[in-house]
Each structure stands twice: as C-alpha cells, then as structure tokens.
Length: 272
Image (tube, rainbow, N blue to C red; front, side):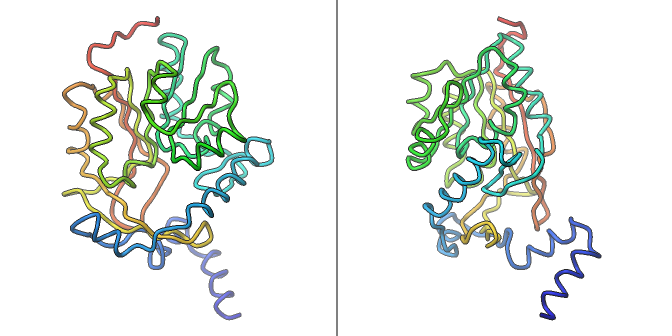
C-alpha cells in the first residue's frame, strides 16, 4: 500500500518527462553492446502472438471509431499527429495527385489510421503495408479495404502498385542489418523515402537492449541508435534531404528521435 501511495505522489509532483526518464531504471533502453548477437543473448524476446493480439484489438477499436489513435498497441483518446510526416505525404500527393505508400513494418495500419481523416480527402491512395506473415494474414482478414493493403514482401508489393514513397517509421532500429534494407529500398528508386521515429546518438552506431514496459507487453530485444551523419550519407548518392524533423518519441538515454524526407535526385518538382 505504501509503494502505491508513493507512485501516486510521484505522478502528482513530477513532470511527465522526468517520470519517463525514471522509468528507464526498470524499462527502456540499456547497454552498449559490441554486436547484435550479444544484445540478442541479453534479450528475452517476446511472444509474437500476444503482441499481435494486443495490436489487433487496439487497431480494431480505432478502425471502428471506438478509440482515436493507437501506437504500439497503446490506445489514445486523441491523435498525436506527426505534422512533418503528414505534410510530407500531402506534399507528395500534390505533385501528381496520387499517393502510393509502401509502409515497411507498418503493423496493422497505425500510421494510416492516424492520418486517415486527411488522407480520405485525396482522390487516389494506396497504403501498402509490408509486414510479418501473421500480421499480413490478420490485416487481410480484418483491416484490408480499397485503400489499405497488406503484403509479405517488398517485391510482392511493387508488383501490384506503382509505389512513389517508401515509409520507414520506428522500424529500422529493430532490424539486425538496417543498412542492407536501405540499400534494397534505394535500388527500387522510389521518388521519395520518409523516415520517422528513428533514434540517433552522438558518436558511433550503438546497439542497446530495449526493455518494454510490461503494461504494454512483456519482452526485450536489440535496438540500434544510429549516428546521424552516417545514416544520412547512406542516401546521399541518389537522394537529396528535403526536410529533417523531430519525432514524437523519447528515450531514457541521451539521444534524439528524428525523421527525414528524402527526394530522389533528378525527380522534377512538377505535378504529374
């Protein structure tokens, strides 16, 4: 009982930012590992079926209008917009009247539903999510419609739709070889690449273990923090950096979450 009263008192007197940093004593990002395998050994993994269930339940509430917004299976009573991301999407759509998005690792449509109100004003939208097979199966069963589509691979997606923007939101840091994926995407030569909710640190790329708040789900897994200059340089030979912006996330270690909009060099700034 005393512990509970202490927690409630802390919530009353401490700013939200301090509370989030203090939470890192128990969960959040930890360590500086020499390899992905080493970090993986220090991780517990996670129950993917449990995560899928929680994400699906939350996303269905958003789809059916019973909640405003979902992120990482957590429901919100209001939408937390990433206005730079939304502005970028609308800007791209304005160039030729079309928005064909490949949302890599886009769950069951979190970003799509986050921005659906304004996306619905566009004449043509195809929001294509590339995800793990179990997410694709659930997406096709309960979420797919004339604008939202699900695929198990990049290749399958681009065979079906003429993608003009790749979106990578809170996904690269959870891949063992993120730069390999970036190379594959750049080879596809999309007109635009948008990065969002991606963490950066001063110095070299850093591998940590992220411990998830058990109120969300139980698990821990490796997570990259990138060197920003190295990261941007991966695009520099074929893409111009149009916009850099601050993302919504925050970490318990010294870092910043950023987003970027890259435009293919030579792509004309003309509608149609």
